[in-house]
Length: 114
Length: 115
Image (tube, rainbow over all chains, first blue to last red; front, side, top):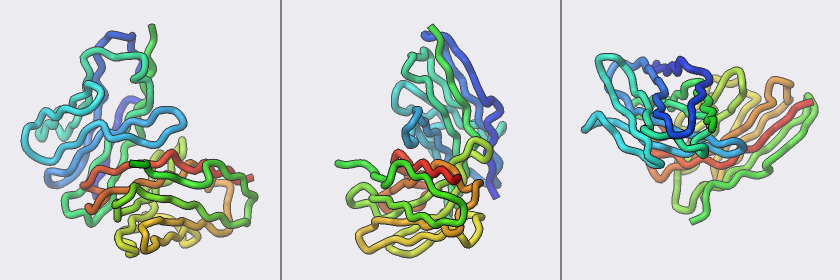
């Protein structure tokens, strides 16, 4: 069964600074990989997803993620963080067969300071 | 197009009671999934439905059940509530695909508190 690890529970960055959120997955083949964001009191919103093709994926709100098969990682990046990016970020892994459910990491809470 | 709606948004129940939560997917979406979100366990998968059929079920006790109607609306039921069932219950819909591969659109959730 697949699994996801987000090593950082909480990250604080200054507005305008760059951001990288880490995600490591465990799966036998190439999985579907997702990043979702959850603002306080809201449901989750998809930022980007990857299955095949270019390993650098562009998403909404200026986010991008890079799939590195050798490291089993799918880290999320943003060159310049805005105060409105403060939220909880979830990495998720899914099997291409669809026979097992999507598995989410425990999330990383991002705080943005002035 | 309206998003995923969940009712009620907040619910307070006592131990031993039962509760029914409702989810209306985005118009045209045929797949609905449910998740339980708690601070300790994070997001855990409950069920996935497609065209009224349960496609996947998470590792939850039989007190948790669900169903999907012909109009794709879905309900989940929790019987004999326990304190540990206090959580945010999220519903997500997707167009046709599987929850593990398709983009899911989440509702705002139902916050259940069990006293």
